[in-house]
Image (cartoon, rainbow, N blue to C red):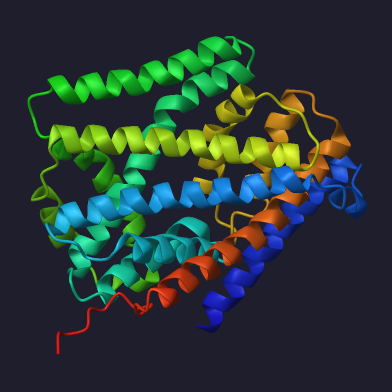
Length: 334
């Protein structure tokens, strides 16, 4: 326990050092610059983040219910546990911890096995990774000034369309095509403390092979994942507007694959420093003023640290108002 705590502290310090170094080399930053926020855009950002998290939760719920062939939780409970996992991930190593939190929430429902809970949540993350990998190449080509913004956006949409066409015309089940990525993801599972002693990875792979996704269901997941990707772009566009920074929506959308991959591979608590480094490089490439870069990097971190707990509390309040228990455990009929 002491080793884990020490490691977390060291990683947090490393992230803060990276963040501090970025602000140092950028030089122009004043905390007063955060006071001149646009309240209208800040409000719109909050509601957009709610919608975005709602999409995340809806897709996660679809996959879990499909894998279990039964409704494991209500939408509002999926929503709560998704935002809660984001909250936890904001202060710990984001991907493995938020993933573990969602698996633990499903397991607590006692309606699904740990193997199926892990499989369903891992598949949900794989769909995100597939979408990012499809659009990251047009994104890189755009920021390297090889192609125009319009062409980059068109290629991104084309990549998703080709994936859908591929799903429609392939002969094998879509599930088997996910299996290669799934086997790679299992290597990550082995390193997560909560799961490494509870999961037999060979059995987990067998469990996954038994899951058969139909083509219509897979297409639905791809489309939801793409809408989710666009909603994230809209959120950050509104965050730029919140701090009075004008960047075209298309440019912000093309920034998402790079910054999300930075968050995906980050090893610091909440991705601090790594996530900001991704945005720093992009904003430098498109020649944003140094003071605006610093304001955005600090501002988006502060705003999201406020938004995520607030969203979690709102969803929890909705659950309580509906007089449903926060826990997903079903009560027996009297």
